[in-house]
Each structure stands twice: as C-alpha cells, then as structure tokens.
Image 1 (cartoon, rainbow, N blue to C red):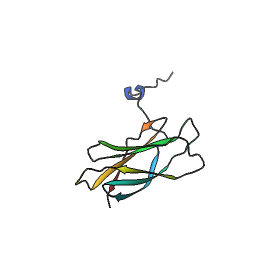
Image 2 (image 1 turned 90 degrees about the vertical axis):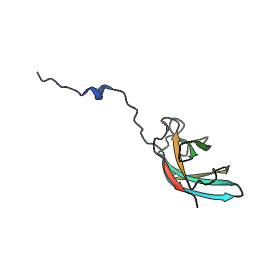
Image 3 (image 1 turned 120 degrees about the vertical axis):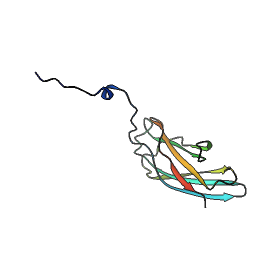
Image 4 (image 1 turned 90 degrees about the horizontal axis):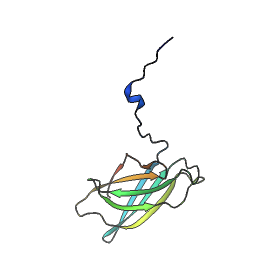
Length: 117
C-alpha cells in the first residue's frame, strides 16, 4: 500500500481569487478642482451570484479617495466602462491606484497605477 504525503501547507485554507475583475483601461480628466475617472473593467459575470460590483481610486499610500459602486451584473456587456465625477486628488499627487472588486471575492489584491494627465 502506498502512502501519499501532503505538504502541511496543502491543508491550509488560503483564499484564491477566481475570475477577479480586470482593469482594461483608465481615463481621467480634471474639471476645476476635482477629477472625473472612467474605468473599463472586464469580468466573466455570471449574473447576480458573481459579478464585478465596483472600483475605487486610491492614493499611492493606499488611502481610498473615491469608490464607484456597480449595482448590477454586466453579463452581456464586456468589457464595460463606468465613470465617476467629483473625485478630489491631493495636491502634488501625480499618480493614483485603481482597484476593482467583485461581489464574491471582494477587492482584488492587484491595483493598476495610473499617472494623472
């Protein structure tokens, strides 16, 4: 009889992101003192049980500057772009991070660094 040995780490529960939203593109435009961001996401939305439900703008230290909530799945609209206005960026900042989330796995651990125009 063969014994099969598993490494100890194989028994540990580790979160695995399946089908995390992908940030396909970012555009930003300054309007007076505030900014408008348009973020294009792709995600294999399956309906209400698993869909991309938001994105946010972070400063380079990871502080949340704005959050865009997506209220419904985009099963037949991939990739898709949504915008948010009135975002205040700290003076002197020349880059921000964009982070996406879905309703099943939460915020993606990956961000996209965006250089402000």
